[in-house]
Image 1 (tube, each protein chain N blue to C red):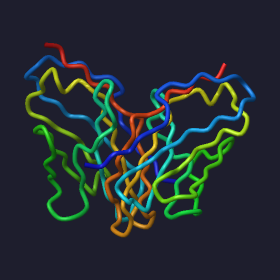
Image 2: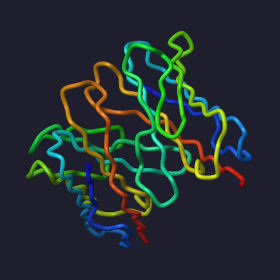
Image 3: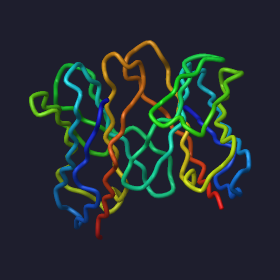
Length: 114
Length: 114
């Protein structure tokens, strides 16, 4: 059974703080993704990674960076948190190779920036 | 850029009513299509997916979806809903040349009254 875990379920941070969100998957998936989920907007892709140390920008990368030093771990970094980054953050992973592989999601981290 | 539209943001049904949730996408080439579901307090999980072949796809829990290429649509259906179907439903599209990246619709929040 695929398991994707995220380091925190809830986080409260102040404007200007540096924020780290961690994601770990245990299925040896090549691909990992970070989304933010906002009401009425669905999920929007921030960044994804198709291999260790590789990353690609998604639709809304501004204000975020990522790190993938190990295959199982994908980190999302908010260099200087702002109130408009208050959101639910979802991590996902999938195999690569076949187009449209199923993505498996973590439980999400609800971030509040004050 | 690809866009995915879910026309109903909120749907309220009584148990045993029939369900149809609309999903339209904009990409004119080859696509892979998904419906994901998020039950209250749970992870986002795959409901069903279409890659090729029979345009009528059956998923878990009695759900099905029909791919109509001429209408750029992938509507989700269930003949008789249950209270346990209360959840948020997301349509997602993978363009044939976009690796494993998904574009999600804005989501439809379904409430089933017992």
